[in-house]
Length: 523
Image 1 (tube, rainbow, N blue to C red):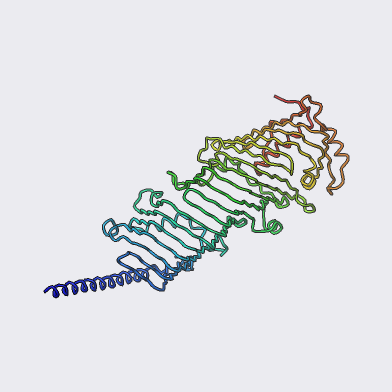
Image 2 (image 1 turned 135 degrees about the vertical axis):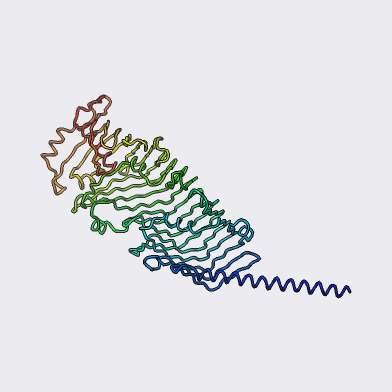
């Protein structure tokens, strides 16, 4: 009897196991067939091929091997997206949440060795893509982790086939994703806990002239680091001048390391994208900016920085920006037969407080110390309020011992003027709005002479040189404190040029009135 009972138990276990195994195989096959049918029923504009599909009902795991996705444009019928992968893994799908709560809950999604090529239509706004995806979702989706391993991403312009974005090495991990299509506010429809993005050899087309490059990018939920960051004009200077209709700067900017710390971003209550960072570090930036003045002038209105920040299409708040070990070269070509004149700044250390348009009523302050033209100490303090619609700003500078002949290569080439002598100390303050300014300048100098050159830029025009030196005071020794003062209360801005041109106009007027006037301090 005991033996018969044991046999019956063994037979029962075997039958249960066989039924379970058979049910599992049938269910797995049923689910796989459903998936294959769903794939076949995709819209005509979407095609998904694959080598094999596997599903395990007990683990809730789904595996799609060697999938290839092709998406066609709805109107053009041309391929706009092509994606190939080694495998797509969806791990631990919760049946309970789906059946009871009508939610799709997944432990992990892994996209391995993704190679994607996408043709972007610049006429389609980005929010239309996200709205289209969200509108088609019915259930709440929760995914603990999404992983993209070793991806290669290429984005092209659909009209020109030119590269917009290239990332040959891309890794990404997103944690705690929740998509709720039922949420009333769009900013609450997509939430996540944390993410980590790592990319190498990044290339991005900023516009038709300039490109952005980064050797490596690491972005998390709270920090971002860009190494060997560059912004460069795609053409050399000669080619660039030939294709330009109006003058435009030729850029070559290199930054060893760019860091954003304690960042926040998202959608503000008025549905504007916002970006905040407690501290930005710009380490060892080098910039060469070249302007060919032989190209036709760009006479369009140039807003000052207050207006530019107010008019940003997104909300920006950078609490502090620190620049260390910087270098800037500005080259300007005004004569086809002469090399471009150059102004140089090195050893730049700067701090910018409250840069952006979020705290508009707080003062934006820029403090800079640098070496001008190799060996002259220069300090600048510049401030303004973004909320001030008059664009009022104050610009103060302190220039140390400066040998005027350092400017020869710039003034001879650009102005046909040869300067000689030393400026021992120069201070000036500019108080301005978007149209007019006042400059107050004081300086001390010795044996200062101005030589006006002939058109060939080599020979001295003796008549004009002697005339102007009769007007210019050769030194400041006549004053008891050795300073000469200059002032102009009505310096008019050329609104077709930048704020730096405005500063130069003020400096020029201050220098002229200090050297050609009585040199006395005015109220």
